[in-house]
Image (cartoon, rainbow, N blue to C red; front, side):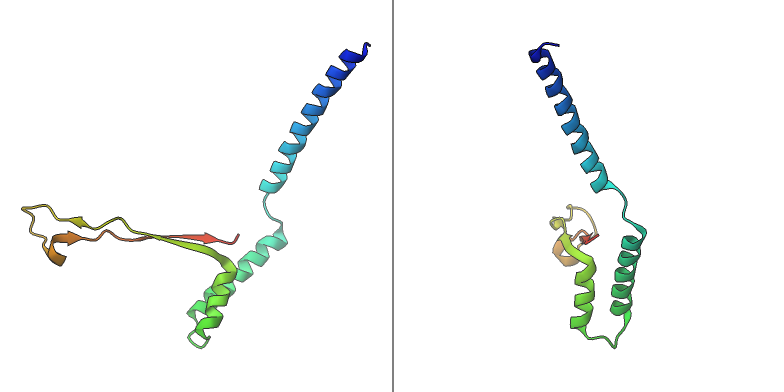
Length: 108
C-alpha cells in the first residue's frame, strides 16, 4: 500500500477515533448519578427542609443548610399595567401588578 493512501486512511481513522472519544466523554458526563450520590443529594435536601421548618434552629444555620442545596434564585415580575378605561377595577390607582415568578436553581 502506498504511503499517501496509508496516511489518508490513518488520518481518517484518527478523526473518527477522536469523534468517538468526544461522544463517549459527553455521554459519561450526562450519565445518571450513582446511588450513593443520589442518596447524598436526598439527605442534603431533607436536612435543609427540616431545618427550614424547625423554629428552634437559628436563621444563620438555616441559611447555611439552604446554601448547601440552592445555587441561585431568580426573581422576575412583569411590569405593572394600567387598567383600561371603562373598567370598574380601580384598585391601586388603576394599576394592576402581575404575580412574580421565582426560579430556583439547585446545586444538583
